[in-house]
Amino acid sequence: MGAAVAYCPEYLENALAAAVPTEPEQPVAAPRSPARFPAATTHDPVPALERLAAGNAGNAGNAGHVITVRFSRAGCAVRRHEGDQVRLLLAEAVDLPAALGALRLA
Image (cartoon, rainbow, N blue to C red):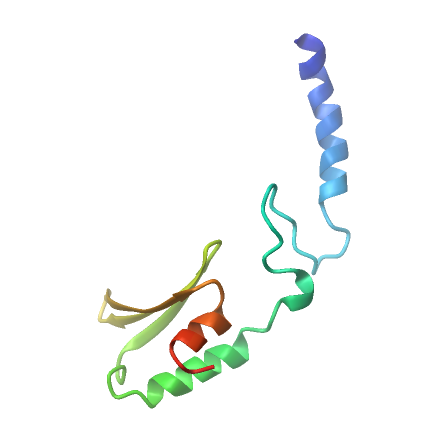
């Protein structure tokens, strides 16, 4: 057991060096997770956010309300707020383009 514990720091150093990409723009892969969003398909969110803002401005039901997009490991959620409270989940999807598709803004 002692030998195994002593080997851990040496192994960890090698494993860490192999796992961390040398290019700063390349994402670090999460262990045991499928590559859902490879670096080649990562999109700039600004055009999609601009479409969401334009769609929100043209929607009378959302006029005057704050719309937020929350990104997480599970995907993203688009919500409408009134004051300090979340009032309505508008869309939930694996990514922002899919959420915009669900809102018919894609």
